[in-house]
Amino acid sequence: MTESTQSAFVAPNLAVSTVIFTLRPDELGKLKVALPLVRRIRAPFDGQWALPGGPLNITEDLIQAASRNLLETTGLEPRYLEQLYAFGSLDRSPGSNLADRVVSIVYWALVGSEEATAVSESANIHWFEADQLPTLAFDHNQIVEYALGRLRNKLAYARIAHSFLAETFTLAQLREVYEAVLDRDLDPGNFRRMVEADGIVEPTGERLAGTRHRPPQLYRATTSATGETK
Amino acid sequence: MTESTQSAFVAPNLAVSTVIFTLRPDELGKLKVALPLVRRIRAPFDGQWALPGGPLNITEDLIQAASRNLLETTGLEPRYLEQLYAFGSLDRSPGSNLADRVVSIVYWALVGSEEATAVSESANIHWFEADQLPTLAFDHNQIVEYALGRLRNKLAYARIAHSFLAETFTLAQLREVYEAVLDRDLDPGNFRRMVEADGIVEPTGERLAGTRHRPPQLYRATTSATGETK
DNA sequence: CATCTTAGTGTCATTCTGACTTTAAGCGCA
DNA sequence: TGCGCTTAAAGTCAGAATGACACTAAGATG
Image 1 (spheres, rainbow over the protein chains, first blue to last red):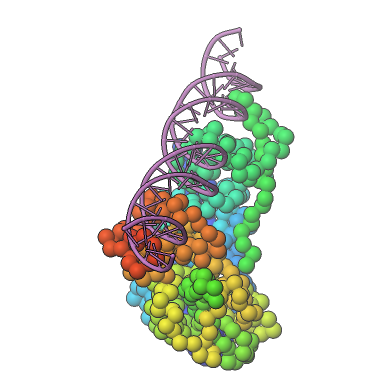
Image 2 (image 1 turned 135 degrees about the horizontal axis):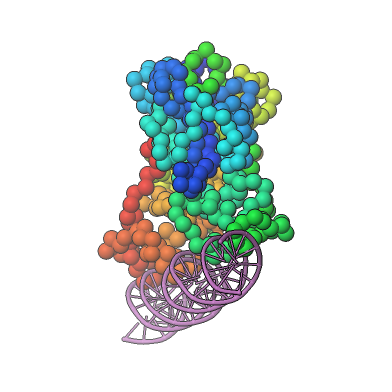
């Protein structure tokens, strides 16, 4: 009844998957939330798109597995990485028998927009806009929706927005991140006030030149929240 | 690399544990957050107190396992039940070898204060005040702290406080719940205003008699949030 | 040099929040 | 009977936070 270490028990398989978010411009040049998916090459759901993931190696931490996942799929290091949820319903893989049951511990990650655009795609790895996903394998559509909710919610109180951007950035760029994630326009003045009140950025002293207008101040993030280390 | 169903892989053991919260009066009659712990009867941590839990049966959902856990430990049904976090660090059980590695998916639950006081204790099951815990087995002290944080945070925006109370209750009783969980006094007038603005309760029309003062209105919760069903 | 565009500052009304006051309505007790 | 005690319930007020919007600054473009 208490936490036990008996190995004779028939345990479900344990997998770690990762929802990897970045921002990329759509055909109109507007930033959109995007994520990479991998094409399955075996049953069930053979040929369908799914979240990157795989079985948990017994020698690695959960977060290490997620990070490895991310590296194997995109070649990138996460700028933010956090556990999302453990999905373990019996009906996740309809029609499969119990011995094939998989409990997935899902992480969500943010990667830099710049790095992500450099990632090469292949026939079996493709980046999708988050609001234009096809029908995915397993319960992965629900998982992505859940992850998007977490991202939107967390943006409001955690210092994670800069994870999409380079080391330094303008407030307009930071605002674009919020607008892309929240999918609505924000008032530039009010946004500046909020950002300054929260102290999430500090000016570098540098200005961004070459724009067609008054040169904006460049900022950097004050605290580097890299996610949990639990 | 993608989610797989190969069973040959050496997987860590999967357990489900539950942090069960209730409120009970301390020696001064003030409500305090309390939770039941079970004494371990095998290594590692033999004799120490631990969260109730056990291996996940391959035929049951995660949340079912948590609920069963709760029933087996306390004989009670949860009034609220939600997944907390999956703990899977390699160093959770210091000194053990990899084959004994356990990944725990932890749930947290709320049970009614009244039902909980009727629960019998034994030599191996005991209720502790949350802020007066001994050193627990594994990483369970950290887990309880994390669960307490979630409880306090969630109280602010979710309709869960009534889960500690009976079907009907006074606003003073509801306020006591908040005060116990947040561990600070709240202004009765402001609390009433908040509760009414949020519409989390509705008056029953009945009044509580037998008090030494003006009889207060009885309320019931408007929506019954029982937690997730995911 | 006039115009366009975004940067950056400032204002105002509304809402939210914490601290506090006032009145209502029971009970216990002289 | 009525006075005082206690908590219920309603109301007041000042400061903070928020959304909408106006205004000035400073570059590029032609």
